[in-house]
Image (tube, rainbow, N blue to C red; front, side):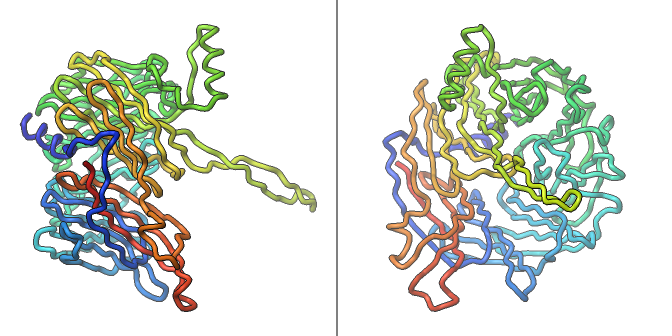
Length: 506
């Protein structure tokens, strides 16, 4: 079991070595008109699978799944009509890559699920009534996440029955449903799935009281592929200023797992990081790491903030960053275990609001949440005894401000070298770490105006992008954008496009 899990972990991250002097070559490029944003996945057999919802005036919404080969030539597609008014939707590539799944719940409480076979390129649909009284509820998750995970060809969906948190297990092959209630979990709890892989023996759910002052313990429960609870929940005693904010599970063998993430005083504001080792349902050991002990954690913040830090140091006090963080599972490299966290802060904008009091106009300025700004990433390395070996920091060149927390970074490993890469709507970034040296590669423009557009074209809106490691030295960048073509006839000047870039990094 250990070898199977370790092999899958390595397979999911292995790429060719990259360095600061990396050469980026566009091997293949494909652009096509498309009315809708596209999500991209790559299968173990090197196929590219895209998922999108197409909306056109006067037409029914269409769910579309398309398969492409290594040359970005279309191999097959599946389309299905779908409801415009849905209360929930999710999609995922199966852990083995054999199937692509899509699930929607419309306002009539009917589940519309699609299974697309990535080998035969055939799709099948199921329409079944949603279990009575079950309500999907992503707001229960940490930071308001989507609260869904795909495991063993099933979707595990967080929701409620009569306000009590529970999990709906939906079998994508048969359409059968099973509701799992977790003992001790009630409507006052916050809940989240921990990340997992197909080779894992089960999935894990973390839950604790929604009010920090009432948290005396935090719990992790294991659920098998059939929705059955295995053993009793693992109880983790709460520590002041070290409440677990999020969690990622990495299996060492079928008995032992590592849980890592961020910690904080109020179960949301991050003050540090942690790693737990759990064996047969019991916490074997735990170690915590405070950001104030990281050598460069605050080095990329503003000059104003740096001055505040120096004043705190002069008074022998710790600086409190008030940051948020999303973290990733442990990456193994020889006897070193590495955890990556992405740091971000909430941003606000001034907005004028007008109201009427006793017939008079009253105007006031209020601050409105305007998304999260990502600033930098921290890399924590520990040994097998969970003792810190080193920590590193690098800047995240991310221009978009998402309204919900996202994980931009992907980790890739080859031998002793770790590679971190990410994409936002404008840039592709890459950083490598080897033998204690961190090297940052120059940013790459995802849409190059000189090379990707005609002279008559101009990008009017970059909508989204993502990057996937594909195979060997190849990556796949997918970009959705709108462009205006001055040469087109009136009424056809503005169009939406999807662009693939198959790039090679040496």
